[in-house]
Length: 317
Image (cartoon, rainbow, N blue to C red):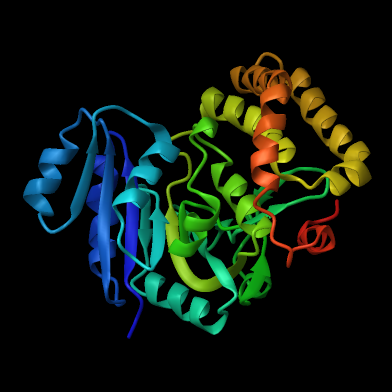
């Protein structure tokens, strides 16, 4: 029997997106699964519309906007599935998305995370994310971003992390390492979760035929996104990277952060560049509390996962 899956969709004033997202989910060939829409205090009538148009869908209506992490965590608390699938509201999943993702998970029982292949909405032959990578210099990013799809992204392979815009996680993973860290707000919270999962022995497999189309930045981006990316990059790095790797690669890490700062200073007239610098500064000023968070994370370490195992998952630049 197929495992039961809970598909969790956080939304805030996103009724227009859901009008395209939900029919694609209704057309999924996989069974059994449930859909949970978490409404972050929308004012566009989303909750009433869902009750009328999609009465069989479970709705978690929050009284205020708790952001992506808070919304997803509320959905995780409500979910009953053995596997939990996260999906952005500004997406359209192909009919075999869930069946392909779960088939890959079944073929790779060591996987606790499954990364989908996210394609651009308007240029459907190009990739937005074939999962996420993390480098030894402390940089996170989307595999294959803006590249044409092709043989390099057609293999089931172990990678560092899924993009939470379309990802599957075993329930046991959340029971072991906790849910998304709401202190992040938005951006890189999925990479942070993947770090904790990898440290605890949960691996990520890429499912190349589990395809979802994404309207990139339809529900975010701009200066606010630049700020959170600048700050949360340091949150992820200082909270999660093992001490031996920080000592070994500190020079590359410093060079990478300085490069980001220099690029932002060159584009100082741009609001996004200034926001990125403010984010970096906020991250640096957060070091004392990050050290406290770090002790919590490192306590999750599994004896089966060595620093060498972790280092082998990270990319060299």
